[in-house]
Figure (cartoon, rainbow, N blue to C red):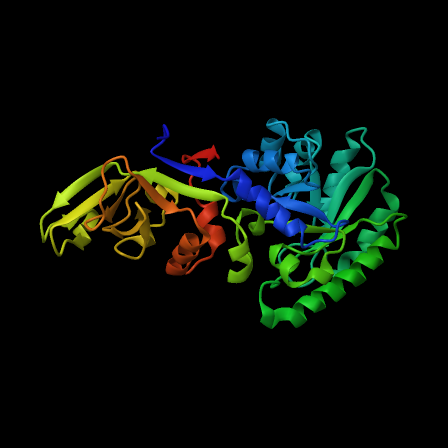
Length: 366
């Protein structure tokens, strides 16, 4: 039993399996940029980053500077792309040998100014194009100014030019996705016309890898697929779940018919009941909306419905029909189906379930 009452077990073999699964879908020349933002999708970015580096990953990718610095602090040497660099912290980004994904004229100019304070030359940068996601990225109207800057500035090296699919997982949006590709190619060609080298092209996320193999280009961005989920049930079936959330029964309460459980007396027993208390609550990432039979956990191979309201640090589950004792293992999820059912009940997506597991939950590499 862990020193912490709850733990997130990280299955290293599953991560390696999933990486190989996607490598098998790619041409040998296609590189992989592994997305380890949001603390490695909740799994612990240092664990995930180290394993991927051992597997000779081409690039790692995080959202913000501090995530990249955290990887450097655990001695990860792989190239690390920062998706959303902040202008006020570009000096630190350079000091830690991180690579910015620049998405506006202001961010590019600010980075060039920061770089001029150093003696670095040919510093690797990445450029983000907006082709329809309409979140971040250079627009078509900014291309002439961007061309002018790229002509003049010789202390930067454009390692890649990318865009982001708005709906690569939806079959109904295939035409829009193809429109994005056409826009991307036109903008890429316009930019590289002023360069004497060819930056890498990358557009595909996990669902793009699966649904649009013809758009692998030079590199793909592999995120959720690494952790065990595809864009449909068939692909997910072939993958293995990396994070597995578990705890143990903390106490058992033996209640008579008509007794109430938890805050606001939200649940009333209909028969003599046994209620197990588990040391995990909404501050740990177990959503409060799973209260009162919306969600469940698994004990000794059986479903135990959540009863009463999920508390900040504790949750009550009905084990009346389950033979169990204090200390028995409680599984919140250890299979994709558990997470998908939870996401369905909460009207959300698997991403949210795994990325909102609290930092106070101990991550244990298995």
